[in-house]
Length: 83
Image (tube, rainbow, N blue to C red; front, side, top):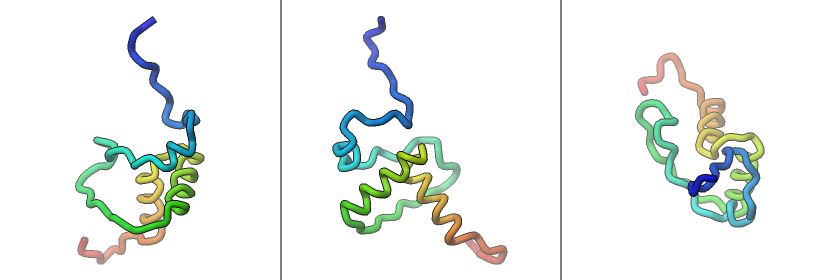
């Protein structure tokens, strides 16, 4: 056997889900988002944060990826948009 700790799959159920929900978000996933990104900070309740993290976990995606998809659906790029 190896001395290296075993790696869990992304969607593996955390041993202590309450601690996982309350834990600080991990640093951004390097290399997962193409191009320039900007950080967006919003104030939400701890309960909302927990629900968002659970929804992302159940979908097998990161919170950041899930919210980027949500924003892309809700705020599609316009043809004439200068950004």
